[in-house]
Length: 167
Image 1 (cartoon, one colour):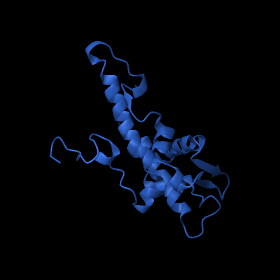
Image 2: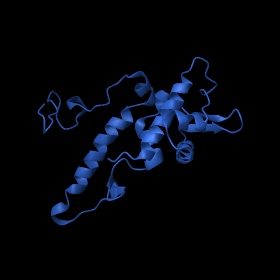
Image 3: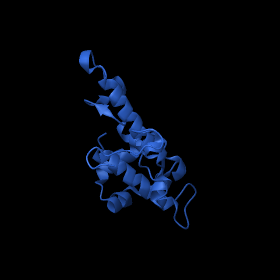
Image 4: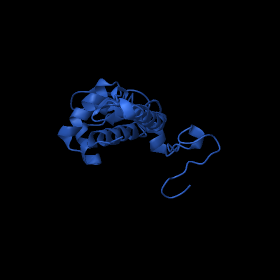
């Protein structure tokens, strides 16, 4: 998995909008946040951010209001929006192989087993990003790190071993 600047910026923007929704006096659906304020607070180029916000709106994660009092707000509660939702909205597939989604990777001969590896990597990434919500990131709840109990890399009661540094 490669986390592009676009994906990183999208998550930072969504977290900023989600934090505004938790303000003491939020508007219906949350406090409206202007694109310029998001860009400034997160150090994101405004022109780049505007394209990202459009993708997030098209994906149904944000809604926008035009005008001098306009801005962006979450389309759903932060507890219902996962990191995976945001990543897919701005980047498509979570894992790519030679620029294509892992699902379409095709191999033959001795390399035929690689497709299964890439699909397993994609599944492990999805496990983490789909269970981590914006709300959890804002509150610091839920450790998104996969462990043996998640079935990632080991069976239950088996520690996940770091191949370089030990357990």
